[in-house]
Image 1 (cartoon, rainbow, N blue to C red):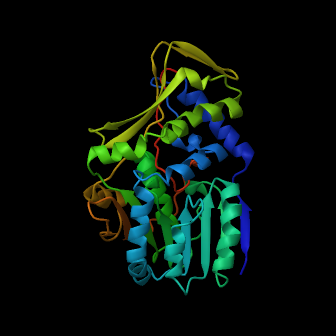
Image 2: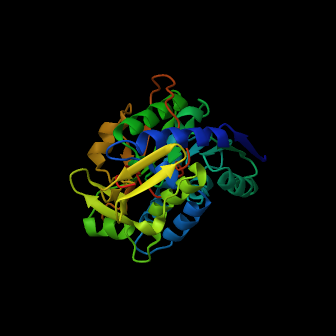
Length: 340
């Protein structure tokens, strides 16, 4: 077998989506941009460094679960096709693929063509009996299938970065892609002591702050904006009511920023990309709407949980796409940007 790359989302599509969201989000009150726009080559490089931090527990915890339970997942789902959402480097996914000797097809979906082009040939070499396909596209619009006996994989607590409406749209799209005999493997970060969560998303080295501020650099580059990052401060704080981290870019003074034909001025000091939401297992069960309760596994202390759910398909459902940041990486739910 070999690696193939399909481009279902081009630069023009991403540019138009960014223009539309910037026009709507940065003229709203409060101002708002989603976390999808934190990710470019610079954001990806920062995240690779974040994953190596000792306080950022999610990658190692998820890896430990997969190493322990990959055989159980294989026995439960017995997939012929695996589809990974926000695949990125697919490093952790190899643990699962190693447990699937009968696998016929692996489909990696990501908005980053460079990530797919880098990971795809490596996977094809490691699994010569598997047809490896990379899809440059959005989750909701470009899910392949349905194929028989499909396992959709969504790791890194990616779904925790979504608002309820977006989460429901994603799950509906997944259900449509699974057919009648598919399964979903979902990686979630569960609620835990607040100080542990805050340490993971507000590191002393300032890498998380740099990732949050990367939104400003992307807007400068893509929309010819004139944000001056030194006039903003990145922040990350726990919201106990919503049980999530909220990530923000705070303006240090009243200022005006121009984005091509968009001008936004404010004396409010706050500019927010928001943060990842931790989940409780009861909420996951309620949200999944699966045909039977999902199976849960977690590391000691409930650090993170991959859950496998069976879905009975209600029929295909496609909603608005997700551009740049839907990789299975750190779940920063970029929300608002007052003070831009």
